[in-house]
Image 1 (tube, rainbow, N blue to C red):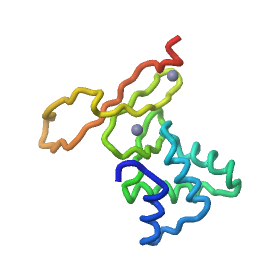
Image 2 (tube, rainbow, N blue to C red; image 1 turned 135 degrees about the horizontal axis):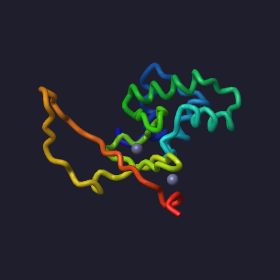
Image 3 (cartoon, rainbow, N blue to C red; image 1 turned 45 degrees about the vertical axis):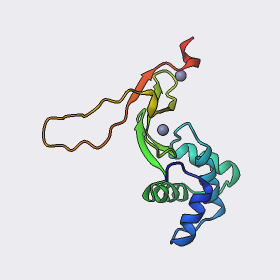
Length: 139
Ligand SMILES: [Zn+2]
Ligand SMILES: [Zn+2]
């Protein structure tokens, strides 16, 4: 499972104990299209436009379940926990001005080769965060 999709989520939920409700479907659809690495609050406000009674608990339950089945990743950026539906290996660009977080395909960053750390750590992977000013903030 690399990219979150409503179809894959429906399939996974149908065999397990996670029940898809209209609210949960809206949460998943929103995340499926999200490229901005939304926070739980972003998800909450977007879902409440369609279902004004959706609770924060429903949002968190859905986010946690998606995370537990490997369809959503958490990343801490700009002092906020953000959710990333792209579970393929990738890097990020973060704008120092507006705080936007954008995916960078792993092919665009030159591989570092074997990383040797002090101590007996077993390095499996790494992620790069490139920082600067986005095209709209440069001017
Ligand atoms: Zn910017
Ligand atoms: Zn990402």
